Image (cartoon, rainbow, N blue to C red; front, side, top):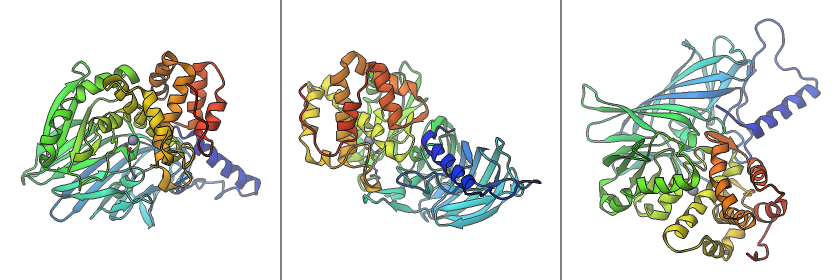
Length: 469
Ligand code: ARG
Ligand code: ZN
């Protein structure tokens, strides 16, 4: 599944440049017309992330993990459709050892270079053809330290492991097209030893004991998911299952027993908060909800993993829960087209905190705006243009991003603003969107040009004059 409009435009430009240079690729006649898919989608921050030449529709991951040795045994079955005649294609994959690969049931040649895994099938794949690739692998998966110093990928925890993937960490536990523009459905089957459990995204579709006492849980994600939102939490958990939204959505929570007492009251409020967010943001986009709460040392920050966000115990507070749940609409259902569009995630999730304070704590969003406006760190760079990868999670992306939304509210008034809040995720439900999609959408709902607002608040350098609201 793919809506990588901006990225594809880049690929077209390259193809055009090659043609203009008189290069026609690797031959024409006979059966040899396919070329290898490119090893990256030219994301502004992670140019090698993702791969071109195909579109993944489904991942079926069959994993087994042993916390005692730290070893993961995996098999990924990837269903995809070729978007060109393909002689070979790449997957993003970090660490681990590949034991074998097939394409449509026949062994494929495997090559690895850095974070790129190349599969060359026996026969070329024709443009438009659906194909199935399998990769079997094992080893001790890696932790990835991002340029901003935060840790993602595969994290060992006190009693198991935790997989976090924003922006690139999912490359550490399964091979795939790990750019947010290629969203897919998932089935994640995880086998773990007796005494521990495995939680992932979506609906628990089956749970079995194996003959040797181990347990297998299968998690089904029916809606498209960007790979950075996949998670896996293995360990001892205190779990609850309830429903929300008129009994339609199962709410599964898994909390480390060490932090369970402190998390109890807030955990019980998830259905009520889902109700409130649905009233403001529109229909809940997924078939399941919940939360995973770990010890502080196990996770360094909260993350909006699809349907089931992850929290360190001390961050499991009301505003962080409201924030990560809001991401289910903004970020998870409507995902960024490239990592440059990241502010579209964090602005709305931060604004959800401001709205919660307004509705439940007698703090008008205007107050939150003024506090953000007074924060020097918010003005380091324009939210739609983080200078480097390490700035993607910087204060401007969150605080100045939310200020952009508040400025829209001031310009268009509450009725139109709330129409935009729910209309934007409806417009791009389960898809991807660019910053330009957003500004055009807002202008179309507002019925007028707002380029002055974008120039100053979204793209402008430095702190503007204080708006007179
Ligand atoms: N998106 C997360 C949030 O809800 C933060 C992730 C931080 N990750 C990182 N690599 N710095 O705000
Ligand atoms: Zn966030």
